[in-house]
Length: 287
Image (cartoon, rainbow, N blue to C red; front, side):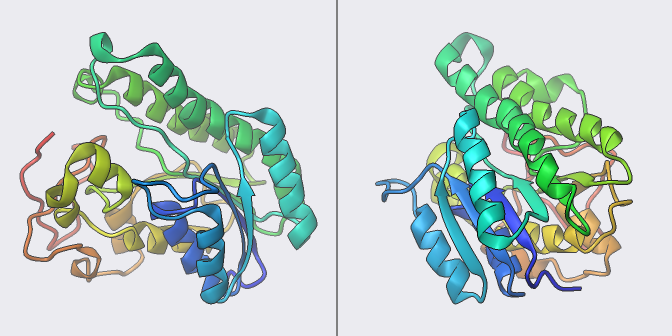
């Protein structure tokens, strides 16, 4: 299986998980449109659409940097059209862009609530919607959401109702769209078992200590790559990264640890019914 000459449209791909997925595809010679907001360097966030594009081309792919706010319909439509014009079509859409704020209802500013829902749930819905005409022309089209299994438990909502609603909203798009497009486009969700060493973890959730207790974005990139190898009949799945990779024959999960000397920090939204693969030991849940 190869993604050579396949075209990926990745939201929020200027850094972190989105960029890792992009670079994995680029190594095959894929075309990657990076649709993200950061066009100029940010004091607290590494990477822009332009630095991401340079990395993609260095890795062996072709890149198209696009400054896009996924809340804006005209920008989304224009970015998808530019991608199809540049590369001759679109094969894969990755809805990775996301906003987070882990606060209870009383402490959640409504502007932040609107931002999370506008990017996470509405942005995912809109990007997927306007990508459909392009995906309909692809040989093996995929839509992938970086969103959790639909595990409706109080513990996932009580500490951060606004964020949880927005993030599960992405997964509801998977549920509905997989049924709507069954047999035509594969629609799946992918979620990490542990925290992932990204800017969100470093700046918002736990600093350098939590970064060392995380896995690298490479685990999600490897999982996404294997998802894209599947036929369109592989659809409607809510996948946990290591469980899925284990089902694909992967046994070495230590390769993904940011710091093997530290215990792994479990992520939230992972169902109790989805235990880790053999040999994977998690640390204490600090949420």
